[in-house]
Length: 293
Ligand SMILES: C[S@@+](CC[C@H](N)C(=O)[O-])C[C@H]1O[C@@H](n2cnc3c(N)ncnc32)[C@H](O)[C@@H]1O
Image (cartoon, rainbow, N blue to C red):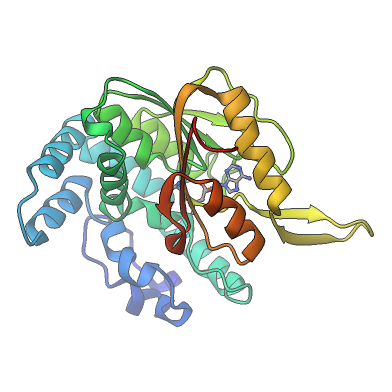
C-alpha cells in the first residue's frame, strides 16, 4: 500500500503508520512516534498518563492545564493541515530523498506532543523553574515551542528563537513550528545563530536554554566558493558564549546547552572546562556568571 491508496484521511484513528506507508524502511523516528501524531491531543495525554509506571501529580497537573489551554479541535486543525493525504504523500517522497543523506526525522514528529513536551517538562524541573520566581528565558532553536509552553506554565516569560522558516508542505502557507508556537501561545523571534555573528535580541534574559541544538553544524561557503558543512570550532563557541554573556544576559544568569554530538575533541575540551555543570557525555553544558567565558 502506498500513501496514494489511503482513503479520506481521519486523524482520529489509530493508524498503523509503518505498514501503511512503508516508512519502516527508513528506520525513522516515525516508527515509534508516528502513531501518536495522529491522536487527539487529549488522547495523547491520557495515554501517556495511563502508561506511567508511577503516578506523577506534577506532570498530571501540567497535562490538565494543557487540556484547558489547547482544545482537541484546535490541535486537530494543525494536524489536518500537516498530516492530510497530500502532506503525507509529500513527506514519504521527501523521506525517500533524505534517506540518501542519512536524515530520517521530519518535523511532523513534533505533532506527537507527549514525546517532546514531557522531556521539556523534566528539563524545566531539573533547572528549578517549577519553584523559581518569574524569569526571562531565551530558548535557542526553539522549534515547535514545547519548552516555552512549559516555561509559560511555570510562570516564566520565554522567547523562542529559531531560524526564519518557510513552509515545507506544498500548498501550506506556514511551517509546522509556527502553527504549533501559535497554538501554544509562544512568543518567537526569527533569527539564525551564525558563527561569529552577534544575536540581536529585544531584551536581556536570566536564562538561555537550548535543547537538541544543532546550530553549531554550520553550512558554510569555503574559500574556493564551494558549499561545505563545518562544525563550529573553539573560536565560534567562544564568540557565542561571550556574546550571550555580554549582550543577551543579565548580571546573574545560567546557560543550559544540550547539543547534538560534537566530534572535535578541542571543542569538547573548551566547552567542558569552562562549564560549571552538565554532563559532557550527553553534550549538556551549563554556564553561569562565574564561568570563564
Ligand atoms: C532538533 S530541533 C530541536 C527543537 C527544540 N529545541 C526541541 O528540543 O524540540 C533543532 C532546532 O534548531 C533550529 N536551528 C537549526 N539551526 C539553527 C540556527 N543556526 N539558528 C537557530 N536555530 C537553528 C532548527 O530549526 C530546529 O528548530
